[in-house]
Image (cartoon, rainbow, N blue to C red; front, top):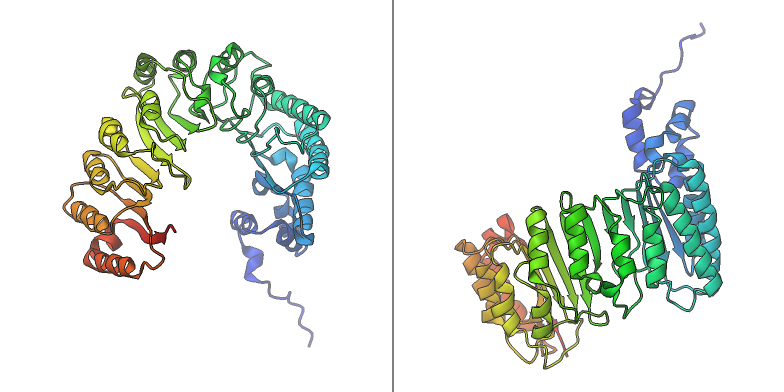
Length: 439
């Protein structure tokens, strides 16, 4: 007798659409395309707009066959489902040469042109480390690339909410051209977050440029601005106060030794901005700017500083004495500082007592990262104070530099300290401490 009943279907056939889309979300392009061949329902899921809202395309300077296929797939799907795209990230993987840059320029020109015509939803764009000041960028290619990018930004300026051009390294005029393209349609831009760290070429005194001030005055809804200290002036702070005080929450400021940072900023300008923008937090990142007189000119007490990072990048200089910075400068932020990062080659001065006193004085300090010459006993003293609730640290990351090849004894002492405070560390702290020979 023939069995006319239909074959029993797998439980996958009854999976709700929302669950199926969630499964597809975790698949890469290759697995998605294979899964789409299973049945009509899965093929329809493949075309769901929610799967194609975020894309990352990586350009490899020296690609393997697998990376080439990955790149071609990412590019093809970005174009195919470009109308759904909301977040696009372009990555360049060095090293690269002039032929690679020329190919990158051609591909990006086509991609931006296609997205400009089909996409009306893009809200986030990131193209980091273009390094347009490198010789691999020929003048003609460079000029055309900037022109294409400016045209694309102009076309999507009404919807774009986030732009990251960190590491572009372009001239003042070119940089202002790109930023002005965000406001060219209405003479105003309502983008909320911009990252222009290392956006301009090295050694530029951007802070003294009327063109830059005019460009920044067109932004009227900034919440987060990431940039270099060579852009800061009293005029810029006044512009931010006048046009963005209702929205401004975060300023991330990088100060590098090779960027001009000798300009004098009025404490009153910072105070007026902080008063009009009560939600404002300022995060400073110093690279090889370690001299006390330089830091004192920048770190004014009127600034609402939430985070400070001081990095010497393994360089050592007898003039870089940190003691007055730890004892006189940073304590001014005792009531607001939440995050402190110190990466110092302080082989010429011990700072255990000064650092511990600073930590105990900062009543809101939650995060501590220190790479420096310290004694192992510093960790025991710090943890003892934390156990006695004299500070509220939740993250402690320390690399203790030593001048000896063999740090067995120090590692033993750290292990003893860990056992002594094991309950505290395991229950309340994100804790990581090691020794590191600096020979």
